[in-house]
Length: 310
Image (cartoon, rainbow, N blue to C red; front, side, top):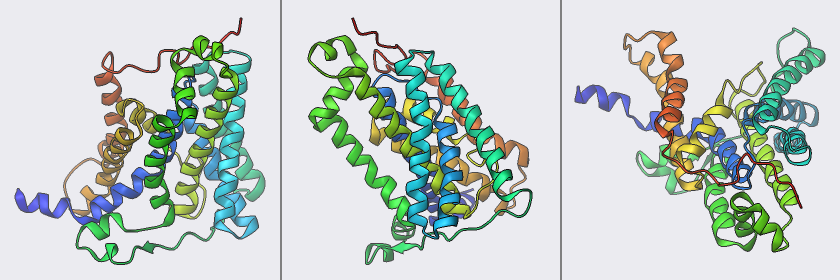
């Protein structure tokens, strides 16, 4: 039993968990900004998928992966702009709007993929080189787990303290949170509720697009139909599990990332587990997380409630 655990929980397994947590971190942190401002964003899946596609297109035609990443973020932000218009300006149902964004993202990327490249083999783009951090990367076990990754992984984990600082240590972060808790009081104090919500939804879209770029450019170097495969919903579960706090959300993302890493690790050790059951595991974990947190988490007070200025 002990030997089996040692074979399973290797440095390679935890390093895979870190890599698989990276797109979830980008997307979940973006979701925190949106929901802290009072806008539910279940459209993260569609924004992520759109970013994955736009990143490959951008990297393919510009020949530069970093430009591809920026284009992915812009595409995610554009999808978020649609969500913001429907949710904030028109004051439509935010759940319905987010669902529409997911459907739009899937249809738009599938259609565009076939228009641009048809049914031929999908193009491959250059990826990122692994950055092994000097000295730290040579530390046994820890070095392989944390300090031998592509730059986007380091960017994701750097984003966490930055997001925490912005949300809880700056005046703008205080204004943002006040809009999500008491928008009328914030408006009375001269804080623009609509502008703040628009900006936060755009941030969520840009970061979800960055998460999508990690999937397409950072991992597979190409785009596949529906390659986000529900990761936007997993990121949503992670931010709820993390109680809309960046550090806790990062930990939740690593939990879900490790669950995905286990899918690959278990067959490699010749354990007799049904492949269908394995593929369901991250999504079952997401479902159990939602069920287990019902009534146990307190979201921002005004989240999901359109603001009507008097």
